Length: 290
Image 1: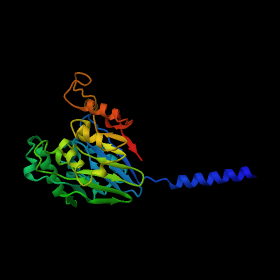
Image 2: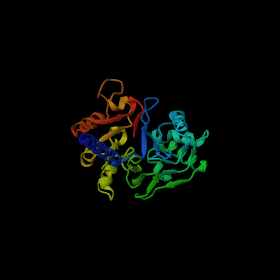
Image 3: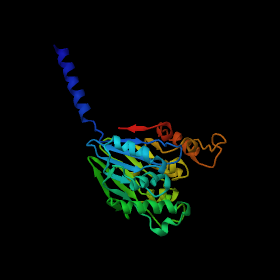
Image 4: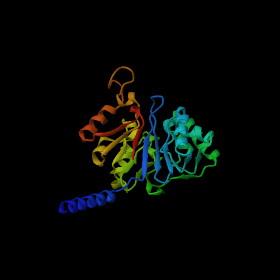
């Protein structure tokens, strides 16, 4: 009889311990590129069914993204845009032009002035196209000019840690990314977009330094020539999100492993030296994190 009570006691304790663990409020999908190109595409779904998107990839991936979102209900509550490079705003630009039934409640971005869009002539036309499509869509938007605002969907929070800085003339588009921290009771993530070394330094010396520490970190600029190595050494994180095609991940433009000009292998070696084993790499397929 005593053994039976002991077993019952431990069963109750185990049940209480399990019920006291934090529960996940959102699922994240890191979407793979459909054409082995650079791109940034993340989809979040909350426990109550609300959906958020981060960037979305290139224009050629618009139909894939439409299909993915249709399977989740064809309704996006908030769409976050890091910056208007074609591999981040291509798909949403096509969707804004032709929604095909997809409903978007709000677009959150840190809008570039017409002058700032001209600082990278090769990207100006696509950036202008995105802003024109957004204006013509009639979808409500929030243009973030200062960091710090928090958006909440269900029990998941999205905080803007940094916004554009048009005074930076080095790598001007990438160093004006809108950086976003996402968290619920169980996990936290930071999305750096294509932040360069200058924006990384700004973040480390800014008011939200402590909020850069996270469980999952999106590797800046697809894992190559983004924030500095010191940035990665300084903050605390446990897992990497790589929005990275195979040729970028392997620094191989057709002549073999690590023969191109990218810095991806250096960052991969750094991540290994930090002892980070959990890595999600987009060219390897769709990743899901609960």
